[in-house]
Image 1 (cartoon, rainbow, N blue to C red):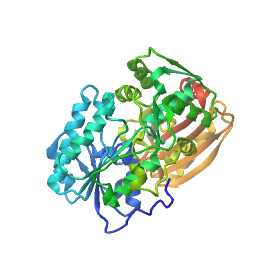
Image 2: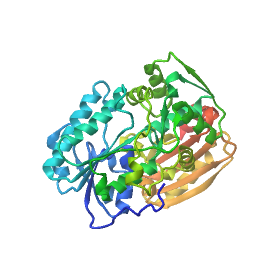
Image 3: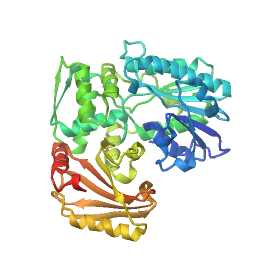
Image 4: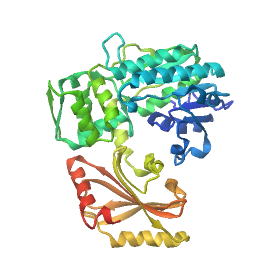
Length: 442
């Protein structure tokens, strides 16, 4: 947390900033803050169409480019003062470390040719003198590769990022929510210093106007360290869940990654390297962040969890399912279980559409729901021409919202958002999905 959030940020003369990895988690939080502070923002994405539903899409310039293809980067770099490198290749699976290195070299080389003055990079927090898991080693080597071209690089290193939507945080959240007995390998005793998403964003903004940070490696984390199992236990405690833990010496990483893939929003290709990375400590060894940015005071992990839980609201999450082009999507996302469905083409009159939505609510009953409270009714909200958001009332093992909308294409859609609390919440959701008069018939 900063004493004065914008004390380091300048709003003029409106320099052009490039954000790579624009469809990713950190970028989605950084871009709105850059715009708020008066920066011109250019986004680099392999598929620009995946950004079209973001609230800030009309305020940025989007350039198609792929860091694995150097020729595609030239146009994106023109006129840029600072370029954020927020890319990793874990989703590629086997061989991702080679792709990471080549991508970093391509990006830095293109930046050098275009006269970019500064690269800002977020890597992994670990002691490079230790024997590191491949994921962490690749993050550190990517920082080295970025520096090879000669453009000044500010490298931030972070471990567990605590905030809704962060891969590591969602992994922690969904495991702690579902398992009264949390079983894991004994190397979960390794320690970490988590960092709140909001604090990372403050550092990334501050680095734009702090020349003294160029060329520095800056380790980020809250003051108090915790073991990885303590990180999960603390989430459960703050959530009000009673949990016990059992650490065993013989659980292979691939087994843990498989379970994470099935029970959390984190896919196997991400889960396996992340799980392997838990075999290393992730600790701040140098106080460089405090020296360079003395006015930024990182939140403790416990406070970051509290704020994340307070943000469980459908109006605050990225609606990534809209980018899929599919008419029915079920997914786990930012603490929610989401069921999105396009229903049918509606009359052109918005008023008629509203009446149809209210009729749906009157005619359909969900288990344990005693009624619905209107949360918001908006024109142009939630990427729709019109939307209606309601919150379920009743004795539910979690919080349930229903959103009805008319898309710009003239179709009605219905989205259910459920934030489950503990295992009963997940069982309730599964019950909704299979009951004849539940979600499946909307």
